Length: 123
Image (cartoon, rainbow, N blue to C red):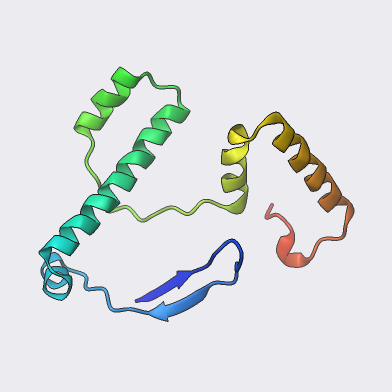
């Protein structure tokens, strides 16, 4: 399986090959039951947090979120990747007014300079 990674400081991804078995039995044979269980628990927590965030974004009251969580089960859907625009806009409410002003100035300055083809937003 090809696995890619990048950092904010080094945005060009690197890719390596790593053998990750496809079945629970094979995963347990290769990594051991404890490792597989802990990895599954971690993935389930992350998936549940995403489910909860969707309700938080909809302003769902906590008691209703708890009811939804009680009936929730993880599924096998693939991880959806956010576009750069989605990531940026989802973080705007976390900025202070000063940070928003600085960001707006930076964006306006970027619009005045010519863009490279890979920097242009998809339409």
